[in-house]
Image 1 (cartoon, rainbow, N blue to C red):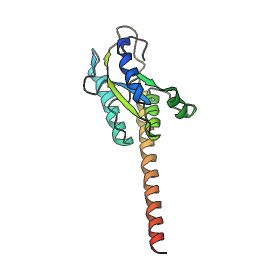
Image 2 (cartoon, rainbow, N blue to C red):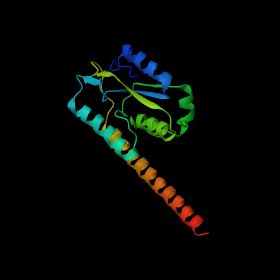
Image 3 (cartoon, rainbow, N blue to C red):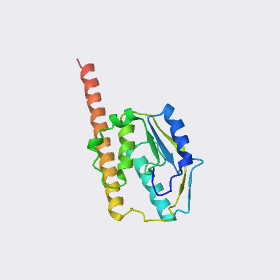
Image 4 (cartoon, rainbow, N blue to C red):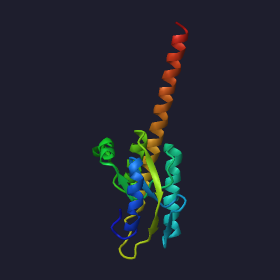
Length: 164
């Protein structure tokens, strides 16, 4: 939860209720019923574009992987190998959702309304965007290569068993 007022405390019960049947709950601006208030179009584009890029490259069916309004079960956090998270910027949000999806944990999204802060400044920078693009690309490539190798190994094993 952001401490700048952009995440509404009164929406927290929605996340906690959903956590009864999930391992990780994402407050989502981009599912039906979610949205933003006074957020610049450029930031909306960046967030939606980043989530789409992540969905395509990593194959996870989540609409809003870049948001920070989340609820985790304690057991989920223990399963995510947090000491291995190397992301320096907001990419750690994607990293945690990706790790949960890889472990077949139940990740659900609930609609939230994100309100643009009225004080302070965003920490978003070009460096943060580049890091996220790079890491998601590498994770997606590694995942595809791993899946192709497993598929080839299964195919070879099946051919070998047919030939014996």
